[in-house]
Length: 149
Image (cartoon, rainbow, N blue to C red; front, side, top):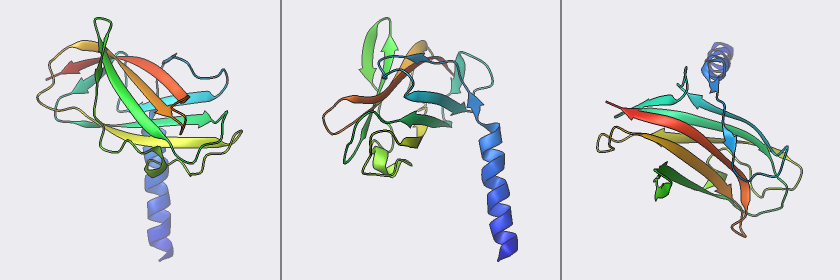
């Protein structure tokens, strides 16, 4: 049993070490609340997202408000036009955020970003928001990406 626990701990630490912190643009988070954004794998920027693959998104943030729940809203911005982008689990409370969310606490949001074969090969900006019960932004970030075959 101890071996299994040690192996799982090592696996989790290895995954965390492989996560690449990316240079993102904050798009409306209260200053100091958005601490870091990691996308795995994304060894260079813009992130090259390969069709048929799934990417991990890990965001550390501090909440400036209380909220019973949270909801992720993701858009691809193509030539200045936001296009809704579906993610497997939009409920932030099912994505690593312990709810209810309390002002001043730090949270770790974890999500998957699947890239469908049907997506066009294009450069765009991903805009990712986590909104509270009042539809206010808990965090908002943008990251340039390129979808490739």
